[in-house]
Image 1 (cartoon, rainbow over the protein chains, first blue to last red):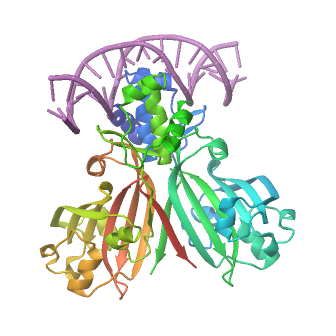
Image 2 (image 1 turned 90 degrees about the vertical axis):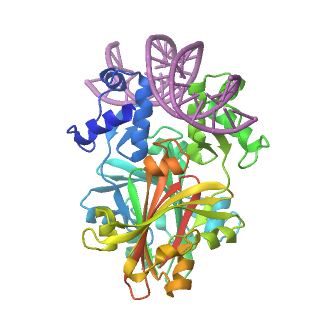
Length: 227
Length: 227
DNA sequence: CAGTGGTCTAGACCACTGA
DNA sequence: CAGTGGTCTAGACCACTGC
């Protein structure tokens, strides 16, 4: 397997996290193999989270995973900063739309109830790691769209609505990334990711919002604790 | 993309969960493409969890995911049965060995402390879904290896030691499967899986065991709830 | 515009599975 | 033992990236 040699080069070859590998044609020549074979080896390392790809831009050495506890009253910016790294949030869209069937079910709403929908993109050290769709019940957050939404939502909730997450239910599983999520994460359509769905309640046990988080599969390690 | 056509055939083509697809050569001919291309399409569907592979045995339509809550005082057999499916556990090995560095750290032990080590393989409806390594502190479970270990450990703990899991810490992330885990799960080395690590405490808050669970990436959806 | 990655063709050999 | 999947060769074209 070419895998081994390539792996060795990456781990001990002085390549640093985030640095770009030589082109596929160059690598395949250097390893005395073809592009197809080389790409299979890279795909295997990609599954391990040792290297990653940006669609049509090439291969890079993967940085360390972020530690993420979805049960903590998560604040993305705090979480990332606490781990000595640099967070960023970009708002892609924000609007009031009728809830889709799936969102309805998650939030426990009647059909076609309007909800705020945010599409956001979050980065760590300038690498996009997650594409998030938030669905928020407007009743609890009138005028939400007026505020700066490129921060952590929990900050907005606290400052403007004196509301905090209290109880969290989440679910996650590996998925193939397609469409919006693949596009925004700059990955090839069909590559693997992790879908984390969270449903959040306020201190009175009422569901106030939910979010669908499409993570790069190599960007996080999930932790949680209970008893 | 061939992906689409193939996907459609699987979803609406009357293929049932668990049924085997025709051979790659047959499919590639039927779709008017080559094996390499067809395999790429299948790999993409595999990432979505729509089809799966058994190493050197062919492609199959994937069954539904199992719902798994690692924070519940998990009993594999109960969990699977409750979801109307059929569980099985196979014991691969059971012995007393010195703790490795990683296990030491998880269990909070001194170097080279002996621990029970179990290797087990668990199936749902006759499909192997997870390869588990259990590491157990012998002090709390003298003579453990004498008992039937092809059940849920929590049953053994309860019946023979009046002990139950109380508090659980877990962590999970996508990994590439290699070596033992790939072999036992019958997947090609390098294919993607989900590594779930649990550290369990008894009612006094003492760590009593931990386990490394290598799941098929398409076999589960993880859930948890807290506040 | 040069070079890149994404996708695809048309073959081949080998080790293993299952009858 | 026939057929299969795993792996590999040696090319090709296209759309996009980044200069």
